[in-house]
Structure formats: structure tokens, C-alpha cells
Image 1 (cartoon, helix red, strand yellow):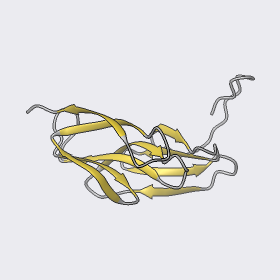
Image 2 (tube, rainbow, N blue to C red):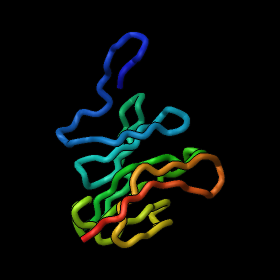
Image 3 (tube, rainbow, N blue to C red):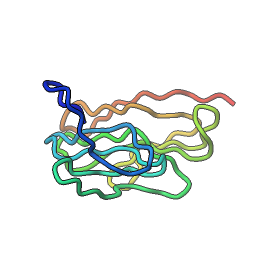
Length: 128
């Protein structure tokens, strides 16, 4: 984490795992991210308490995003290949349940503009 004013960097996690696609909770207390390319982890920034939010064997989660109220995470996951080369099924997941499922698409960068139930996502079609 980088303090823009001072330029000081602070380590938020300390694992050998590759960690990417961070997403701040709306209240700024937690950070969700993809860990090791196999799961979504959540860490409390002050204090470092860490938990695994989502992991499903045979799927690859990505693009975590908090709901506007900070009560849940939405993330995309895919299975059946390694994008963008081959994607079998891609889903957006909330509360452990798919809210969007697409065959031969790769959803990325989800946007949730307000407290309502509308999601906006970008998705690329995959050609075989």
C-alpha cells in the first residue's frame, strides 16, 4: 500500500503467493484480491487479519469487487481453459451463487454503479 502524500510503501500481506487485482471495500477497512491465481482472499488492512473468501476447485477467480454496501463481493470465475485461448464457462458470482453465466465468453472488470441490483461488465467473446 502506498501513502501518496509521503511516498511510503507499507506491506499489506506477506506471503510467497502471487497476489493481484486488489479491490478496496467501500469503507476502506478491507482489501480483497486474487491470491495464487486460485482463490479470492480478504485482508483487514489495519491488523492484517486474512481469510479466504472464495475458492472452487477447477475454477479460476478474478476481478473481485465489493457490493456498494460493502456486505459482499462479486467476482468473475472461469473454467475449462486458460483465457483468452479457451474458456469453457465463465460466471459472475455473488454470495457463492452465479449471477451471470456465459459460454465461450471471458468477463472482466465488473462495475456496480449504485446500491441497486444492476451490474455492468465487459466481456470478450472467445473464438475457437
